[in-house]
Image (tube, rainbow, N blue to C red; front, side, top):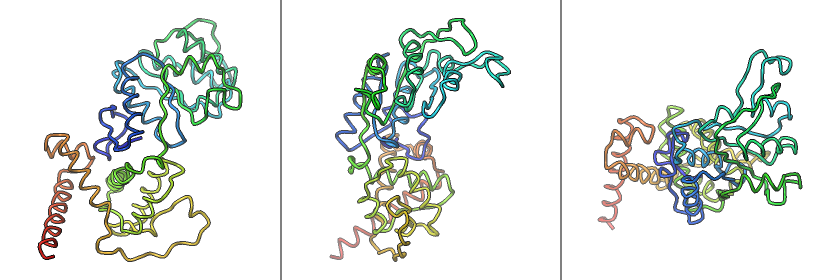
Length: 336
């Protein structure tokens, strides 16, 4: 996905208006999502693993007329049909060994809100049949009961498999057409190079805040490595790499030796390099990010600090660093 304004904030409460991008394909994705959010149509979100499908689904719900009601997420991968029945539709006491009380399923819990079915392509044919009935008519039965239950639920689905034609030929066409009133494709991170610097800056701010570290950016070699990397794990990998790098960096600057990338698995450790004087590329990106947030909140520093997930003192320090950097650059230009 893209970065919410206030990158260190939790994604769960973000609406589509809080995301921005400089990439044309990603902007088209967000524009389509905004249109879809205003409707009651089911939505199918496609994209590689880790590309941000769950973040987008939450933002669609938060931007929809159902935003005041529950957003319930369910991952359909690797569940037996019995367990899936219980999770999705609930069960009665005594329905199976260990069922000591009645339990509501995800459909019932999502009443009046949104049910997000992640990895829907992994459902068995039997499970697909039951979900088709629930999606189409809002009807289901708890495991161990023949009493018909009803729930008013909007369904959002996601998968990294191509569904048209079926995942391994197993996906029902009638279910595919029922869940794909709107189809939205989230582009992989490698196809959005214009967003990468801002995403890295936001993740460094988020990781620093969570770990209580004052990380100001990357040295030149680390920045060049990350900006050239192909990110097979997309946003999920980016978050993992940055949080690990923040933990490994002994000082305020992340170096190349602190990066743990998938392409380095089994390779010899890279020697640490001394950070060059002008190598803190992402420090500037962080300052631009702060400036954008301040502009969005009308210059209110208290609100900007809250959006960024940092203290007011930290925000003031970052602004002072940016001011000093501008002064040094202007002095350098005058001396040329």
